[in-house]
Image 1 (cartoon, rainbow, N blue to C red):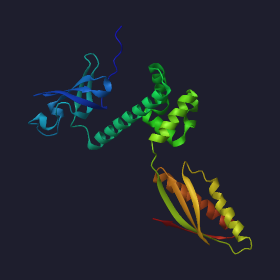
Image 2: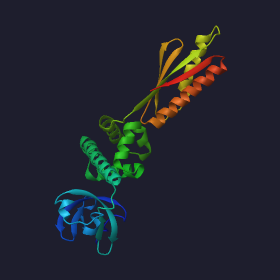
Image 3: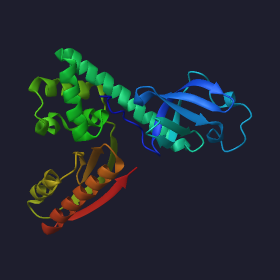
Image 4: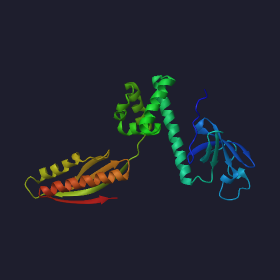
Length: 261
């Protein structure tokens, strides 16, 4: 029985390699589909009149194309270059680079453990099923550690090695926001009240943000928040300052805050 062939979907972006150029269009192979053949008609190369196809593509070039028609019976794939926007092209190339990097990292893990091809494919499939893509899996392990793999029931040595490789090779970028707070209390135990207010920071659920408070000299303190994006960092900073403000006001003290930068 002939094995089922996986075909791309209409509207999907694919990476293709130019195989031959004719007066009527370009024959390509689809890199992500076992080098399946596809055709780019001259009318789908550019929005304007195309005098010379070679001005747009060259033999051996890798290009991002959009699938516009799929004939499952004849296994023919019609493609378009003119319908691919600049943003779509950039996103597809980023996706491909991530997939290539993830594949390299997985091969490193598999090599370190001397895994069989069968075991390697099995574990990869589990990761893809859970995270959607191998790169997303590796990135999440780098961000949150081995705990995100627990429900997959992977072998301990595999999970530990994957975590070590992920944390070494995938650096999660961070941003920082900060500001100055002034805390005052005229009561005899004012220092203790200020310390108590600052301890409220520990109760803030920061979604992965790291919060640090530096003493600058009474009554000023600097709050620093680091996170992987500004949305998370800003939210954590807002929660922290609100917690400290509420605590100081309950204790009869005063609070002021000025954001920096």
